[in-house]
Amino acid sequence: MKPVLICPKCGRSEEQVRFIDAFCIDDYPLNIKAPGKEELQRCKRCGRMLFRGEWMAYDEGKIEKHILGKCRGEFAGASYDFGRQVVAFTIRRGDKELKVEKQVPLIVTINMCQRCNQISGGYYQGIVQLRGNRAKVERYAKMIAERLEKVTFISKTEEMDGGIDLYVGSSKAVLAAVTQLGVRALITKKLIGREEGKRLYRTTFAIRL
Ligand SMILES: [Zn+2]
Ligand SMILES: [Zn+2]
Image (cartoon, rainbow, N blue to C red; front, top):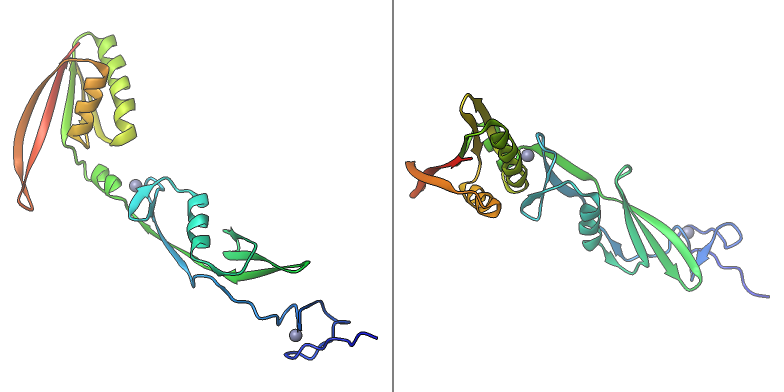
């Protein structure tokens, strides 16, 4: 007759509880490490997250991968449950499989990203002045804005009799957009001050349509 296993830690027998090797499933020594917590900053205005030093779209897949990348030990699989804030490990020992969970709180700090900070402060580096035929001005303003919003921001749009002015976060981005669209712009650069030894310019792109 095969002897009945008794768990050396809790004293239960294999008739009462599942066993893995010499231990019951609850006391089986697991060498699994998970981070104590994960911290994340999110922007209250745009909802993006600060991830590996960069602001980007909030992405649970990236966060999960990052947390799981910090877990160590012998497990066959793992996933992160955002609702319950646990890492669920799947462990295989021979033909037995068990699930183990470890708490990894996700601590989210609400902050404001640099871009939103600048937008709310009315910051701009460049002004796009579109002048000419009203319908054309509107069409180009839309096309330029679409391109710019992918790489920077428009902090203000001013409509006036003669056309539209766009106040843009990055002059470099304006230059790229204007070049891509193949429109001719009269560029004037104005020194507006210095910051940390660097000259600060404001660039106006006057476009006649
Ligand atoms: Zn036990
Ligand atoms: Zn933001």
